[in-house]
Length: 325
Image 1: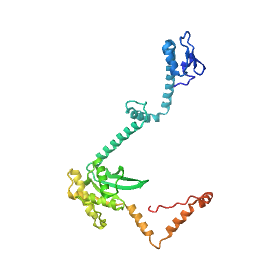
Image 2 (image 1 turned 30 degrees about the horizontal axis):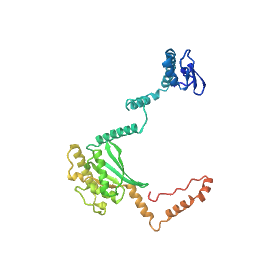
Image 3 (image 1 turned 90 degrees about the vertical axis):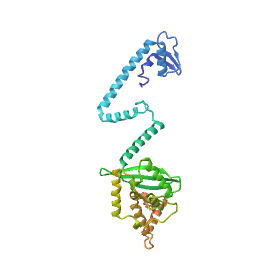
Image 4 (image 1 turned 90 degrees about the horizontal axis):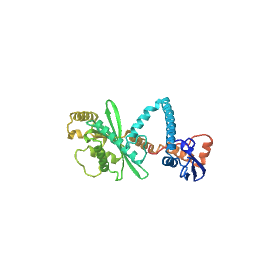
């Protein structure tokens, strides 16, 4: 919109003081006005002075044309922005047919997010159909909220594909039965059959390990807690490879999962978490105290008494490690 000085409608009015506007058109029957807003003044010209109103319209049109030509020149000189603008215009025009006159609102954003999420889910369903997949699962608690993360990995044309299937807020107790139910619900959303899952990677928590066991079993189990089976009781490498091949053949043939193929699923302990536990156990040995002493020194140096001197010396703040990491 043109500024007040450029707007031609103000040429037909004079402002003597606040709320005292006079129409300068000769023989005006209602020359007194109270608003100096251009819209009100244009409405007065349109209703009372047709000739002057048409003149204002022509002059305004000429100003708009000159501004548009200048904008076109700027766009042409920066042609690299054209594809981005075209893409944005195409996306924005899909919202209620508004084109560039789009209002960003929670409703519009929600619709776009839901549509994009459905598009991704449909693509994942298509990619994992009749294909062996690997699942990663972990649960974390922060500020009295527990979240369960579920990731999917599979091989597509020689490349590893990784998707985050869900981040679920866990409001029930963290038992293996509840985790199993969460997994099955997510599998149902993405059309993943249990026989397609050949491994589930988790940490060494008893509830996580039991979740893998009860999923791998071919018949329902009771809710009694049982000790973790020894790793030696798992399938050896040759047997696992053989069953993976059988599972892949079943996928390609499109047959129903058999009892033997169902037992393909194996729980895999996260190697990083296992290494962390091994290191913590080693550091707990009575003869190893250097780490504990270094941690105590860092705590003292991080206090306000010493931090002032450390900053004056231009040194960095001492780093204290995380006990479990």
